[in-house]
Image 1 (tube, helix red, strand yellow):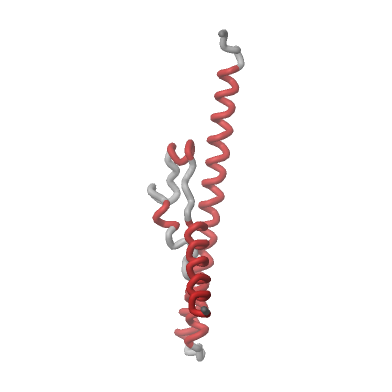
Image 2 (image 1 turned 180 degrees about the horizontal axis):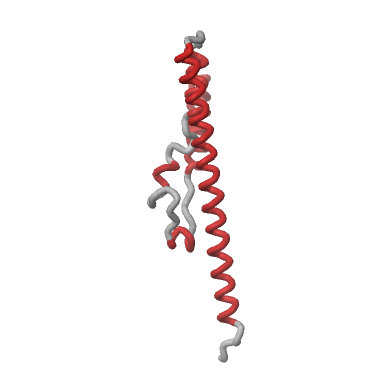
Length: 120
């Protein structure tokens, strides 16, 4: 069975498209992480300014701001085996596995189960 002459071009274009999409996804993920960290820093800087200025702040308000600044992807730092900003070829080809959403869904389900068990 003869191989069509355009088969290598199809394979090359498929590989190039895959690499491009994965690199774009990695870039977007890095931008989201950067924005999240900047937001956390901003919240914590505002809290420290309030505390240093002597403005009366309730413990509840402090806890709310701390929870707001807490990283929603606390397990997300462990998912990056390489240095931040570094994209390995294996990540480009196979993609990174993201489990942060699943972890938060699991935590929410556990919390709902605990609340339901308390009511019963």
